[in-house]
Length: 108
Image 1 (tube, rainbow, N blue to C red):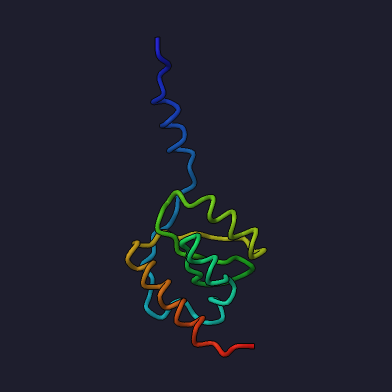
Image 2: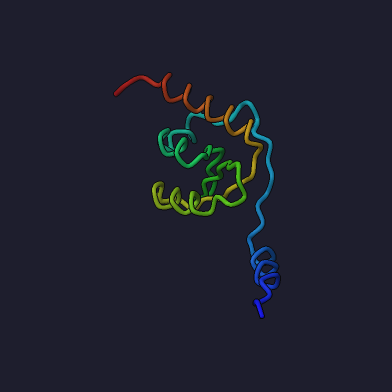
């Protein structure tokens, strides 16, 4: 007899932390928050830094399964990370704005 995996799946789905949804405003990311995440990291992990408040970095992600990316980002930045789910097209547009911010900054 095969084991019934449905109970394991239900348990995994119901024990999973919830993630909030957010449309990304065109005004984000702001330069002071954008510089907290290196561009290469943001592109690789598909995250966009949105806000920093009380030591918590809020980032947009396109997948609710981005837990490994969130853990990696927390380790890289040294900040607690709060993910919000955003539509993939908005995330890509925000990544383009992030690229523009990074390229517009003067070199040191």
